[in-house]
Length: 193
Image 1 (tube, rainbow, N blue to C red):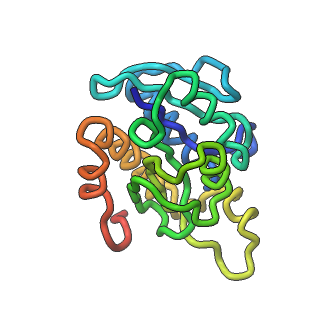
Image 2: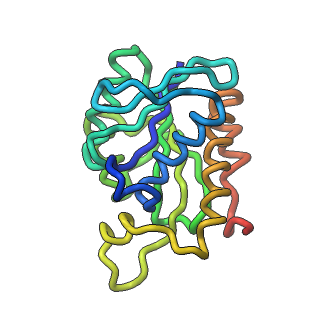
């Protein structure tokens, strides 16, 4: 069984912001695989279903980004899922060009408060991640303001493609393992438009 958690902030005003790309990927996975996100529990919105023949639990933590670990820890404990092999976290990454995908099996928070809180609550940096590049903040911008901002029109097509790629990366982790996903998705250079 896999727990697939997309990071973001609840409430309408945060929809389609850079920081909510994790939520957007969960929504796309849910739609693609006919999974209804209709259970409010463990401080999150949850949907159960199958991807690649494996049982999955899709999760959108409703604790706000900086407390994502509270929800994810509760879900893992309740369903007895091991974070090393069974957790996949989808999140935004400002160190990657818009639309780039990176798959990792472990690592530090890299300044991402959502990841920092997950690591704090799990007591481990070892869990699979699908990072979605949202681009570096322009000089003089406040980081929080930047990640809570919406994508400009010029990046919308790239980000739609990135959401589909992130879904494919999650599916590949489930069917073929993280190494196969890293080989397929961790490309150098900017994504093609």
